[in-house]
Length: 402
Image (cartoon, rainbow, N blue to C red):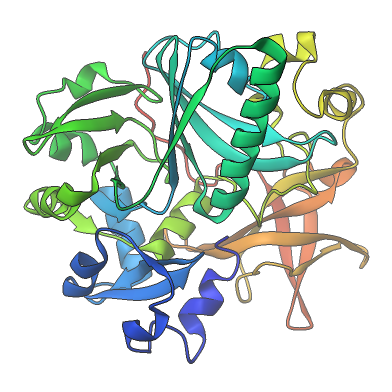
C-alpha cells in the first residue's frame, strides 16, 4: 500500500500541499486533529488521513531519531479484530500458516493468510490472549478483504464443526493503535505504566494501564527493526496518551515516510508491493512463516503449491539490493543482469539514512539470488551498478529472551 508513498510526497496537487479539507472523503483516525495541531502533513493513505511527516523535521531526520531515540507513530488505520470461542485457534488455522494452537498464552506470531494457490492474501499478527480468545492486527489496505475472508471462513468452519466463533472488528473510532519504536521506547513507556516491561519480550502482549488509562493492550513488536511496542487503546483517550508520551523529550512524532524507510532497512515486507496473491511465501523469502507442524500436516490453504516449492525451490525469490551510485530505485524499476538481460523488478526502494546508500527489494531468478551477485538497476532509462545483499540491511534490535 505504500508503493506510491514517495510519489505522494513529491507530486503536486496532493493533500500535503492542499488544504486537508479537500481530502475529507478519507477516514480520519481519532488523532487527526492532534496531527494537524502538531504540524502533520496529512495525506489520503489507503482511505485514511495520516501524516506523512511533520513540519519540524524531515523524513530522514525522523528516521535517524527513531534509530537513536524513540518515535511515536499513529497506526490506528490497521484493522484490529477480536476472535472468541473455544475453537478459535482451530478456526484461525484454517486460514493461516502458523500453529496458533501451540502459541503460549500471551504471545503473538506473525503469519499470513494464503489462498488455495499458495498466494499471500495478507500478513497479520495473531496474539493468543487465552485458549478461547485471539487478538488480530492486519493491514488497513486489506481491511475489507480481511473482514470478508474471516467471515467467510467463520461460516465454513461453523458449518463443518458446529463450533461457534465470535468475531468483532473494531472501528478506528473505538480503538486506536499507537506504535512507540526505538531504543528508548521501553524506558519512555515504563514511566507511564505499572507493567514490568523488562519481563515483556518481543512478540509478547499484556493488558495494562498507560498514562492512567485502563484497558490498553501493550504488545512488544513493531515495523522498524527496533525494540518497541504497539499499543491498542480506547480511541477517545488517544490524544491524551499521545500527549503524555510526548512529554518525554526523547520521544517525537513520526509519519508514514519514516515508517517506510525504517521498515525497508529492516528488510520487512509491505503487502501490495513486496508480496501479494501473485507471490507465495517461498518466493517472498518468508518460508519461515510456514510452521513446521503445519508443513507435516499439510492442512493450510495452498499447502500443495507451497510445500512443493519448499522441497524443489521456487523459480524466483525476493532479495535485497544495495546501490552506491545513482538515484534510488523505486517500485517497478527493472533489475538487469550483469550481461544486460532484464531479470526482475524492484518492489520497494529508497535511500537508507542509516547507511548512506540506496537500498531496495525485488524479485530475481533464484539461481542468481545469492548475496554479492552483481546486477544493474534501470532507472529512468539509465543503468546503475548494484548488488544482491543480505537482509535486514540494518541489524534488528528486538528485545528477546537471552
